[in-house]
Picture 1 (cartoon, one colour):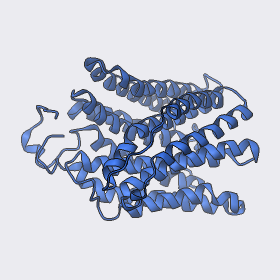
Picture 2 (cartoon, helix red, strand yellow):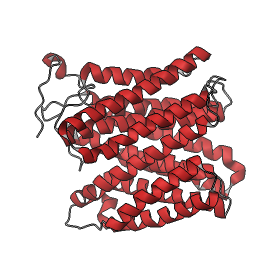
Picture 3 (cartoon, one colour):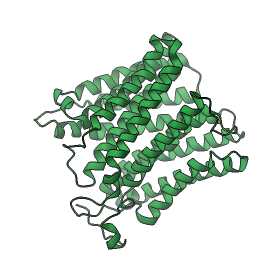
Picture 4 (tube, one colour):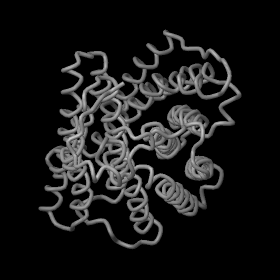
Amino acid sequence: MITIKNSDNQQNMNAYALFHLGFRAFFLIASLFSVISMMIWMAELVFSIKLIPNSVSPVYWHAHEMIYGYALAIIAGFLLTAVRNWTNIQTLHGWSLFVLLLLWLLARIVILIPSEQSLFVGLLLDNMFILYLSIALTIPIVKAKLWKNMAVVSKIYFILIGHVFYSLGLLGVFHDGQRIGIYIGLYMVLSLILVLSRRVLPMFIERGVGYKVMLKNRGWVDVACFVLFLCFAVTDVFFTSPAITASLAAALCVLHSVRLWGWYTHGIWKKPLLWVLYMGYGWMIVAFALKAAAFVAGVPTSLAIHAFTVGGIGMMTLGMMSRISLGHTGRDIMNPPTGVSMMFVMLFVGAIIRVILPMISPENYQLWIALSQGLWIMAFIIFVYLYAVILLRPRVDGRWG
C-alpha cells in the first residue's frame, strides 16, 4: 500500500480532489474535450460551418486532436496513475499536474486561433506537454529501477517524435510530415493499448466474472504480435508497400484473434466493464482485417482507421476510464453507475455505423458520419454526467488519491 504525505490544504481535500492524481483531471477534461472537438468536426464536415482556421487542414486537425489531444490525454491520466502504483513513488499532483494539464489545454485552444503565430505557439505547447509528460513518467521509473516498465513509457517518447514530424509538416518545413506524424501517433497509441491490454485484461476478466477461470496466454503469440506490429507500423508509415502492409495486417488479425479467443469466457457479458474492453479489442482485430482488405478488395483505408479509432481506441479508453475512476476513488468496480452499458452500446453502434454501413450503403456516407458523430458525443456526455462528481470528489474510503 502506498503512503503519501499530502502537502495540500487539508480543508480543501474534503470537497476537491481533481489534482490529486493524473487520472482525475485528464479523464474529466479530455472527455469534455472529446465532446467539444467532435461538435466542431461535425459543424465543419456535416453543416459546413467554418470553425477550423485555414492554416490547418480540417481532416488533419480532426485526426491530430483525436490522437494527440483526446487519446494522449487519457493515456497521460492512466500512466501517471499506473506509474505511481508500479513504483510506489508519487507522480505529478497539485500544481505540477495543473501545469501539465494547462499546457495540454492551451494547445487545444491556441491552435484554433486563426493566425500563423498561434499555429506555431499551439504546436510548441503540444510538444512541451508531451516532453513534460515523458520526463514526469521517466523519473519515478528510473528512481525505482523498474527498467521493464520503460518499454511502456518509451512509447511516449516516440509519440513526441511523431508530433515533431507533424509540427514540421504543418509549418511547411518537412514534406509529408503531417501524415507521418499522424500515423506515428496513431500506431504508438494502439501499441500502448495493446501492450497494456495484454497486462491487465486477462487479470480483469479472471477476477471479475465471479467464478474460477484460467485464461490462455501464449508466449509465442505475444512475441509475434509485438514483432509483427512493429513491422506493420514501420512499413505503413515510411514505405509504400501495400502488399507487405496488407500481409502483416492479415497476420496480426489472426494472431490477435487467437489471443482474444484465449481470453473468452461467457461471464464477461454480465459485466459491462469487461465486455466493453473485450469488444474494444475486437474492433482492433476488425481494423487489421480491413487494413488487409484495403489492398485485396479496395476497401477504403479510412474505414480501417476508424475501426482502430472509434471502435478500438474509443471503446477501450471509455471502458478503462469507467473502471479506473471507480477503483482509484475507493468505489466498487463490480457495481458501476447505472447508464454505463448505455454509453458503451452507443459507442459500439457508432463504430458500426462509421465503419460497416459505408461499405453497405456508400451513397449515404455523409449520413453515417453524422450519426456516428452524434453517438460519440452522446456517449461521452453520459460519461461526464456519471463520473464528473466521482472524479472531482475525494475517495470514499478517506484515503488520499
